[in-house]
Image (cartoon, rainbow, N blue to C red; front, top):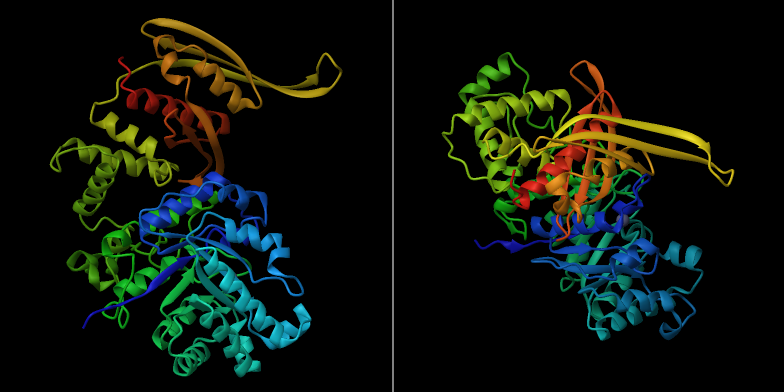
Length: 532
Ligand SMILES: [Zn+2]
């Protein structure tokens, strides 16, 4: 039996960005969009061009995708206005996207109470909007807002709304459980009925998680005939979140009745990048990963000793419903040294480091990593520090320079104009080729001052560092072992646009920052082939 295609649509950059406490930079959005494309998502929605400066800037430069279609989001044309007199609508239409998804009403109550327009006018607005999207040369998608509530109240009208979108060119009609309160059985019944009454419409599902059932609702809709699933990475979204793609994707690919019925842009090979995509989002949000998240959580495959581990030694299937590698996650007990080692080899290959699987130095490196992770380091979001650690273990990193000491002073004082200012001054004493350099510089804060002082004069290496810039800085307090420590992640950029992250851990925030800064410089020198 041949498999049916199932379309995947991501709304992390729109619904996810609505989450309290989430504020993506344009760079963050680019990183997330690229990861979604790599994962094999079919549609990456970039946001609502014109709605806020961040979304507008993100849409000023179209991301280059290998697989995904880039979608802009907007609202159907405003009531009581002609299309030519709706500048917001025009901005969405003119955004450099492949597809335009417009949300519109499908619940009579919303039309009469929120829009205050006759029911027929809303149908007309949906139709005109879809036609305009098609005329602009974009694929048109329709998000039927509050569809399940609307269907309960007035099924005939809810169906008229989606029929209007379909007949005027919508390639997908997405049924939205906007308030997130619908039960899976109800959604199954409604989608089945819609499928029966309007079989020609390609249906999608967009579920919110207000009863912790958005994944179940989405899967119920798929069983009933929906062929597009919308969701977000890690279930990010306003209120209780959206349907979690990190749970839906592996379920679709690894579980029946879905695995043998459907094929998606995410295949089994791409699924192995899922955990990394999930952790990347956490790092961008400066959040610890949700420990118990299904499939991708750090504890999803963690086994405590005793009975479990002895059974696990015989066969991992005794306590694991799927192999952790299938989603790129890791088992947390060492069933055999092989498990840790094969994982390490995979990460080395990722970093472009070629090493024989039998190399005896790998055991030491593995121990080092475990010890450092225990101390609070993480290499999930700090690939550059990982590469440095690995290449050091393999004897590939020269000692470019040595830091003797550093000092930072933060002073609040009055400047010459009598204004109260905070000044940071750093001194770094560093040895290069037997020469000692005393570098002093100022910065907007202690880390900035240290970064400037460290790079001010590194002798023969100074030329390599002129295009190195600090682009992001994140601090997290964590408990490692028994101590509270600070972990700092520093993101740097080189002149070729390469971005890389390094990590430092210490009880002292300045010390942790300094460690990450030194790693960044070392990596830059290494990549540029500087000679020691
Ligand atoms: Zn939504």
